Amino acid sequence: METHTFFFDLLVILLSARLLAELAVWLKAPAVIGELAAGVILGPSLLGWLEPGAAIRMMAEIGIILLLFEVGLDTDVRRLVRAGQQSFIVAIAGFVMPFALGFGMAYLVFDLSLLVALFIGGTLTATSIGITLRVLSDLRRRQAREGQIVLGAAVIDDVLGVILLALLYEFSTGGGISLVNASKVLLFVTVFFILAPLAARLVSLLIKRYDSVSEIPGMIPTTIVALVLFFAWLAHVIGAPELLGGFAAGLALSRRFFLPFGIALKTDAEFAKRIEVQMHPIIRLFTPIFFVMVGLSLNLQAVDWSSPFIWSFSLLFLLIAVLGKFAGALLIRESWTMRTAIGLAMVPRGEVGLIFAELGRVSGIFNNEVYAGMIIVIAFTTLLSPVVMKGFYGRYGRHLVSQDLE
Image: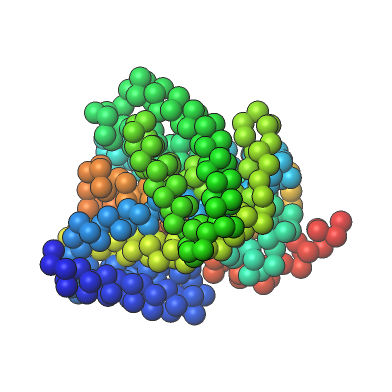
């Protein structure tokens, strides 16, 4: 790609992503829908103006790693302790049911290969903690009883989802499904999550020390980005996806992180907040490139819309995506209004689902029709869930408030 072409493509991607994200938020939809729409409009699905080269794709890879870093940074494991057993039930059932139903339908009903079925099941397990947080905050229910249960469950889903992603990545690149490959990845992931916080803690102490004496601005974002990229490289070296490194780095630097077996790692909340504030603009610069890239990679014109497959596939897996997340909420001992609110909050797939789908496409696991079907499912759960949640709280919110007072 010529230099001037790269500059123009990047300019178009950034501006279109921002404008359509603003439009989406104005329409009360998540910003990620606007960024995804920008890629669909600019790509082969509609206008066909952009066909990004290697440089843009590399920036999208950086965006996805930084996105997982932000997910890890926002993860508060103490929520699990506060929400307790109910969060665990909601998370495990909401993880297992969509995976089992999605895998079973793909493998038995649609006669897809074992690896494709596993990727479809994995994509349906995701829960977008970012979208859920935004909606609960808008409704002023983030600190409410159901809010704590949902956020605790979303934390567990994030951790389980990243581990599953590491396993599927190994299967897609390691020549197929095997117990040896799975055991290797689980061992590496366990060691990585134990050692990564210790390494990140030492590095953060050095960053904090030299940031106070450095006369050049930008010490924190420069060194943190370098740390995230190092973790991503290290994850690749040990045989896990680079995404795992970004997530582990964010988790290690989060304000409230607990090592396995209950050993508390004391962190400086003020310093962690400074990291979050200074990294936010960089993350917001790169992550829209990833979401636009997802839209650009989708060729809706190549999909045979007259085929019964795409409609039955999308509708069936949309139903599984919704009902699978409600399964966990129905198992806890709460009122029907509380369980319905929790189930609705767990439905959005958002950016986490897109990461699974994109890995399936890049690995050659998903063909264009399966990929399109997954994107449709993710888009509908991401778009409709916040709207339904706001309508539900508008009608039944007073019942939830009264339960808080009991």
